[in-house]
Image (cartoon, rainbow, N blue to C red):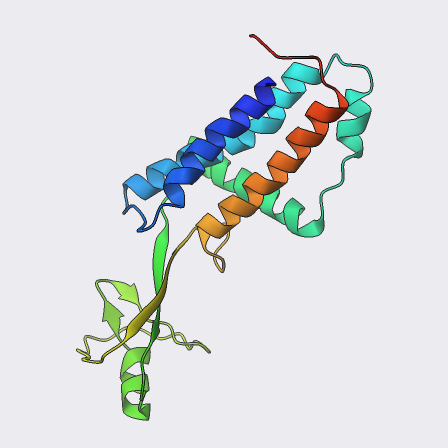
Amino acid sequence: MSRAARKLDEAGFFLGFLEKKPRIKPPEFNYYLSAFVSAARSVFWVMRAERSDVPGWAEWFEGKEAAPEDQKLMEAFNSARIRSQKREPLQTRASLELVIPGLTPELEAALRSASFRGLPVRLVPATDGPPSGVTILATATVVAVRQHLSEIPDVDIVQSCRQYFDFLKAVVEECDNRFDRGPSSD
């Protein structure tokens, strides 16, 4: 197994914790996220250190073009890594998706101006406004709980981590298949 593949396995280890159901709560979630980001961002550095002397590798790697969505994801995770390593720990924010049967205009108006445990309530389509101290009683079904990171605000961070991991895995597998030097022992 290449060193890059082992570094990818490390990122996968932390991704496994992030994907657990029910999700682990902050601050532990943020710690595992930080570890995932660090390990995942290191995969290409390890690959470069491992393969840079292999004939044809540098040309192959420089010629790799990520799809626009993968490029955007790499940039977002790089920003998160830089922030985490140099400025402040990663901290996610949560969102909760509910289905409320029989939503009346009055209840909808109250929800739009409410806050629960410090988390603003956003209805789609959202309108921004300051939360008030309204107490609301309603029967609801939780559809999803999501964690968001400022670098990727509109998508659940676990979904983004999975997408990033799958992208890295495809590149590592292609590299290992193309430039296999046998098992790495260092």
